[in-house]
Image (cartoon, rainbow, N blue to C red; front, top):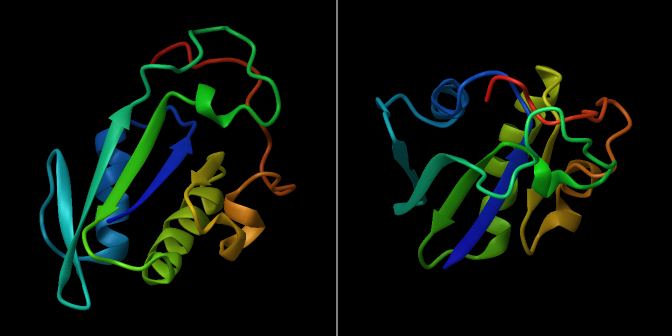
Length: 133
């Protein structure tokens, strides 16, 4: 099984972010998550609230992406890491284009743009936890 977490920091709801990811990769409807076929094998995408996130107004130190309020969980059974590089890169680039700080945590970070997102000089790092998450 291959797994990748993409931590992100956005005032957009996790459902909105998940819907945007779904549109990037598939045309099926999604509520809580969605399944995407990669060469005939299923990969499951879900967006979740990060229970270890920094609280509202709490300073977030540069590089501490695990303090971001949400993450996208991508899990594929019987896949090789290299199979997920392209879809994870698509999602990361999309989030960055929307100026959303995002960092991938997975075993193939070195194959992703900006080593998975940290450091990414094009994106401003958030200073504190979200007030309305």
